[in-house]
Length: 72
Image (cartoon, rainbow, N blue to C red; front, side, top):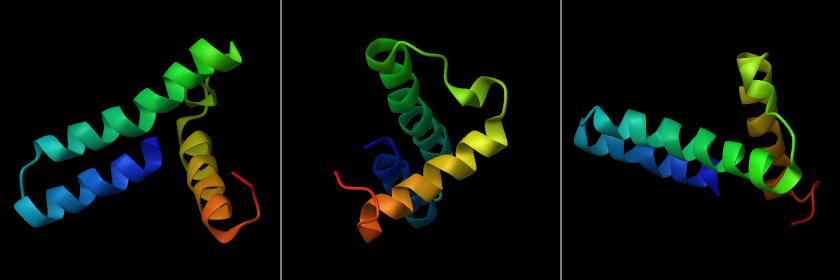
């Protein structure tokens, strides 16, 4: 959900040229992930220690969900 909303926000940024959509995109992308890590999985997100690795992993998983490698 967070990655999809992040893409929507980035599309809005490009369409409207309003910089607040960059902030909205970051909040959507990381907000959903952090809430699920802390609230549901009861663990600490990797984005605190390895932000780039976490970012790349999220997009690889997002791709795998859309291509059917990971079942929803």
